[in-house]
Length: 114
Image 1 (cartoon, helix red, strand yellow):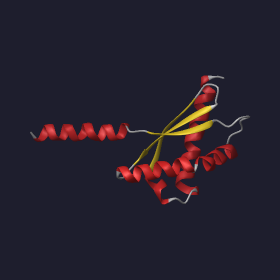
Image 2 (image 1 turned 180 degrees about the horizontal axis):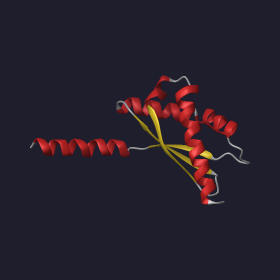
Image 3 (image 1 turned 45 degrees about the horizontal axis):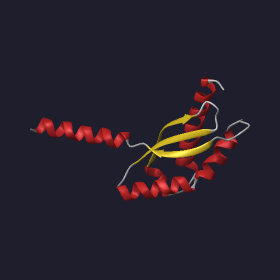
Image 4 (image 1 turned 135 degrees about the horizontal axis):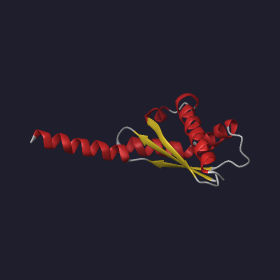
């Protein structure tokens, strides 16, 4: 498969999952979830969906569990839009890079205060 096709599929999955979170699934925990990026293997068999979740650690765990539980609904929505022979197996990953950015920002603010 071409890298361009994998990139197109990644963008499509990101859009579908974001729209599904925002408009189609009625779980209030999903309001705290933001899709940052999606990576798809070149053979289009696997897709990793990187999300960030706001809230306390307990709220994050609960929202992530709800995401994992709703994996079938996301696959149906992707399948309704995608024109592919096989649907990629999706996996959600908690992207903690924003937490790290917040931590570094806090450290810099503390340095400026001193």
